[in-house]
Image (tube, rainbow, N blue to C red; front, side, top):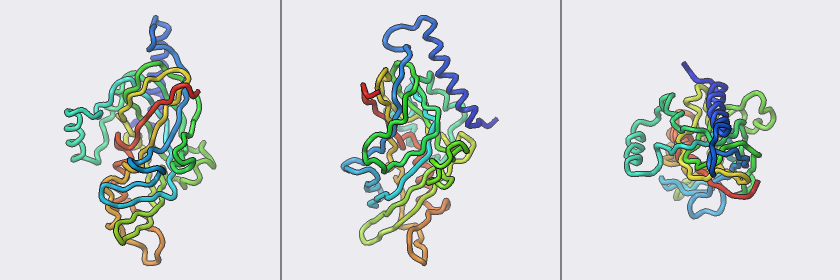
Length: 277
């Protein structure tokens, strides 16, 4: 049976409510208590860079994004560690998994995150370049005090309720525009990524985290666009005869690389800023 977006939200929401209900059963100490925190988004800078959306890929292309928007959410914060966190055994597992990509995870693996410590249960349109490296604060969210060791989120088309906010995406889940240059070659491009149902193909799961969730702090999800372009070969794109940017087709190597990488556990990271609520 396929999991719907509504069912996905209900199941994980029940996990959070169940954890909160445990407070009435005698939980005490620094963990297990109810907290209110802020959730935010901020584009991660590539190593050695000072502006978001500028980076050099592992294939030697210098990429400068001129537009970058995505729709994401809900977001769920888990107590259990990611099985893909960087340990020798997990690095071996990840290496074997890389040979099998693209392969969707089995349905039941998503729920191995254990207790849900916090959530943002709404969709968000995020402009990765707006505001530079500043944080876009989404708002206050309920949670349970404790160590967040992994998180998961959804990438999906906008629901009907998003309205004009999602208009710049033109119905897509992610839109990226910019230039890629290497030596004398310059490629202007536009990439449109779509993540339609089922939910198994929309979620980014097992993202490692190490954040102590508490009152009056800001949990920040950081998209890492420099990681999304790993393995992308822009020289394999065909420039239109009329000139102008290349619309990267779903059949191209660049599109396939992005489609896989944006859903990897390395596509996002997280951090915590205390006392900002």
